[in-house]
Length: 280
Ligand code: GUN
Image (cartoon, rainbow, N blue to C red; front, side, top):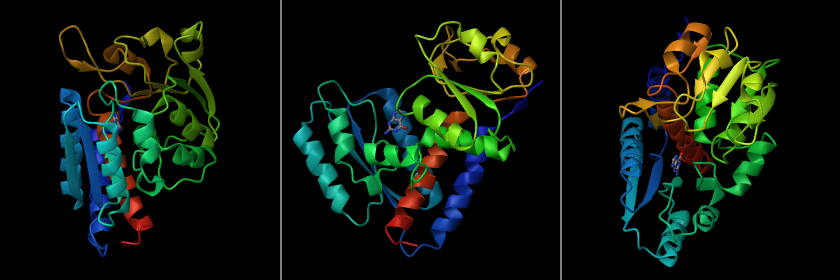
């Protein structure tokens, strides 16, 4: 039976560490959160991020707009927040409603306040292994592996998914720790043949039941980044948890695995931003 990688417990520990460090800062770190429209999932995520800020002793300010807000209004707000010294991190909750240019907004955020690590400048710095920020979800996975003393060094790592937010940077971080990385995606033939070779398997697809026990190597580390709902409406990932847990060495649950760690790493990045801005 696999050891459960408990993201919820580790996130609490990481946030406690962040809180302790922030307490000695000359000024509290500040996060600005921009939310556009009324997507219920985005509302839940934003509320969670504001709660995390309060837990860590950070200030947080929410800027909420109707879905018909103009690009000019949003760009003017980002410009103001870029110049506001009380703001260390700026997060624009994605996805933005149709008609708004997501890329243009993300490009307008000062890279020194880009706590999501979505700006191409920070993505480039991460790629060469020289970044202040790391993208929250992949960074959270790396922290979970580290906590469990699992090193990617010399391991075969298979990442399923190639999004700019999760899949691509996940592979880069594993590579930087000397993993041998294979990316799989919707055009990959014989997925199971590749996943069966993985010592560390990370799936970030969004498809219920994608990973079954026959696709997993005995003793593998299985990390499930997805957040889906099954036919009964219950939260689940890409992995058939019960059967895969019998075969894997380590496994992350959904919920309670990667999700809480993503949020904790946002706090780590906001603390790093405040340090960058001389608030220590
Ligand atoms: N939407 C889903 N995940 C994220 C995230 O990590 N950051 C932002 N800004 N939006 C998201």
